[in-house]
Length: 557
Image (cartoon, rainbow, N blue to C red; front, side, top):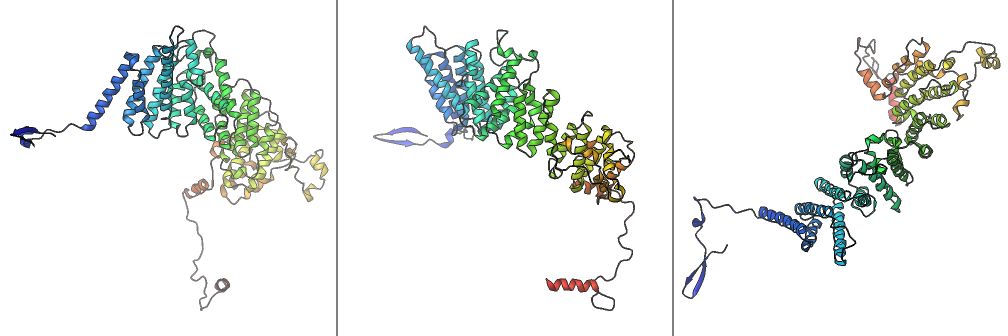
């Protein structure tokens, strides 16, 4: 630091002051932190620029200065955040004061100022939407909060301007929704948007779905991640109104006429239907279809009180994709049949086609069994159809792992209790008038050919009801003792009302093995009566027969 200047004749020398003179009680004073001072000065400058913007139009150029700090977020993130907050407050007050609205009596200069302010607002919004998807979670959350604060001011200006602020593709709200859909790394922002705004406000939910529909229609070629983002956002919307009285939470200006569409439950359902249909028409991958089918029953169907045929077509197309999609699609079709009275005569034919050799070894076997029991739960199903499903599963159990067999046997038991007409498949007493015995008079000597048509695709024409469940009788000799014991329940009296199938769904090789190893051994099994002293040699010396064979095997290798 510069010192004092002393004068000696013509010469002038700079002399440093004695360090001890600057000490207080023998201790040097601590220097103020330059970083802290600089930060405080920057914050004060930002507040001053904000106040000047609101004081006079002469200081509107301060917006450009603040915007330059916002654009420099990578180098100075804290300063950019302070500037973004200041600009948000400034723009909100300008919007509330109608400084961004052109009036008929305004001069050309005033109109140019309004246009300039709108351009600055669009630039500010564009900068903040660039923060969405940022790896900095606080920065992303701040951007979303500030943007939605601007949206609140824009949608609270009167009926006409508020409607335009919700709907137009250049509005702040649409730009926010578009940024959420286009950003590949904005999962947290989408969840926050739904939790804080969509689920809490009916108008935000309404116009969000409208914006997604507009985005789907205007995008020429949507990328796969955009569709995934749409599904991710929509799947988080769980608050679905089912009565007009539930419509009353507004983020923007409340709708004034009683006939306003925001107060109409059919209007909310219609915009949701159009939103989902726009996604159905997109080029969906198997992963997209699976995501849709997983929420079809609990969420999507609640929006549809008509257009059942369109949903049925989508579900049918998903079924034709095969694999796990087929089962998920049938679950949606079954819901439409039971709750919406959809006429779908091919349902059980499609379900029957899923019973192949792969289903017993699939990783989705437990879920398939659960849905199959749900689909076959009705006691009004024809006996011929029920018999086809019983017979097909009995055939598949011959090559199934023990974890699958232990579910099939109690399920067959429950189905026979529910449909007594199928019990002839277990035991059919001799009657000369029956076609089986009439066509095979020497059945005791030659036996009877199985009447089941395994290649028939229609479960109503397989003749399974004229067959028998000899496969399940074979399982009584299964190598696994639990399976053999369980299969014997079909040869005993049906005294149990029904089995709880949840107890048999999740068995596997590992669970069956753990159950065996976990049993308490009451008596140690005896493996050998006499422990041999030699295995490969004889008492007199030399190899025995087993040793000779082992030696030959070693020599040949």
